[in-house]
Length: 168
Image (cartoon, rainbow, N blue to C red; front, side, top):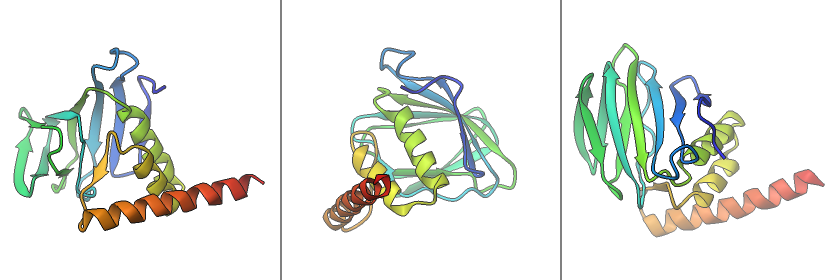
């Protein structure tokens, strides 16, 4: 269960949950995203069955959508259809803010929280475990895809073994 008002902040991206799947009967997950100046590209990825909507309210964001670059400024929006490979970042020297909706919500809130927690622990194996566990809402787009998927699957299994041994 993810809760409205939750804030996840890694220093380059701050996410505040506005509405979650629990609040909307699974219809959408909505966040306010604040991108720090010069924020990096996240890994190229797609969402297999979800659409995203970004409404930029302050500053500007750069997007890569299936390899095409697009800049979205305050007052504009971008809709990213399911399965479109994409990335977003703030390349400017001032913060950028956007409303970010994901439809349907799926496990989006739990995914962002799990990724944030794994990054905070600086645990590469945990990151692989999260990516593997949340394939219904997030898939990396790295080539060769079958090899990358197999490596993530294997690392996730190693992460499970390490976790079990640590509990002993």
